[in-house]
Image (cartoon, rainbow, N blue to C red):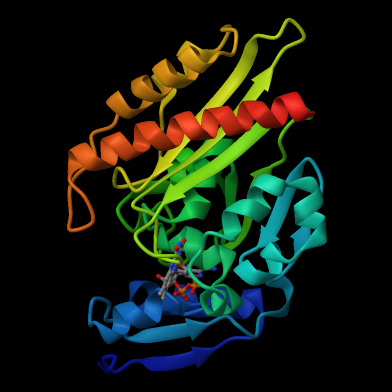
Length: 289
Ligand SMILES: Cc1cc2nc3c(=O)[nH]c(=O)nc-3n(C[C@H](O)[C@H](O)[C@H](O)COP(=O)(O)OP(=O)(O)OC[C@H]3O[C@@H](n4cnc5c(N)ncnc54)[C@H](O)[C@@H]3O)c2cc1C
């Protein structure tokens, strides 16, 4: 399959990218790792008149530590996966990136591209929604910071305007003593997950759950939180029965659609099984300290 005709525009700075995006408007698409955009072009599911290649923009590849891990939009998945800094300060982020495709895809694919593409089954949006992460977008009009919950609007749809460049993605670091887990079921190693769940659990000094986060990928048009199950967990004493009932509550709150990978009932069942496993593993990490 060959892509439709387009004009290739290479930029070498953020300012130049913003100028070109302002000038070209919705006729243009940003080209980052190309791991999602190029297949879409080849399948003729996207038909932009211009591709604005940002790969030579030097200052968008940072990986910075702090209370929030800040990743430049052009950081490659593989760089994040191999970063000692990320492994130490944000092991959940490190673990999540490993689920993305295969090494060849992670070598080229970028953090900004994955988030801007907004595939509902992609792992990074699921993690961002779990952690209430943030996305920085720039245009010639200025800079804005969007919360993950407002950024992901629907299937492959975000709040980014055509003239905006996603410049940074921010993943809050988990508070000390918080346990975490990511569980995914995919048909083959490296495939997008049929269902993915990201869980974090914190326990107070009395041994009761003080905070729980449960976020799903692959069960709706965007990543979604299981808010009712999260609330039901807070204040409870951890137990096997609690994990089972919370997993049941979380799965029941979902209304997935079916496709060739699974019926709605199958996806809901998977969501329950994976959530229970994730809660057990996350709590195990709390106990391990
Ligand atoms: C076989 C295969 C398996 C895969 N498996 C997985 C998987 O399991 N999980 C997963 O999450 N992903 C998976 N992917 C997708 C992969 O993660 C891509 O890297 C990612 O979705 C897009 O990143 P990219 O840098 O390649 O973006 P591109 O393909 O270059 O761009 C994707 C979209 O984002 C826009 N965009 C990119 N960067 C910016 C920016 N800075 N500002 C504004 N818009 C921007 C583009 O215009 C385009 O619309 C897979 C891909 C393949 C080919």
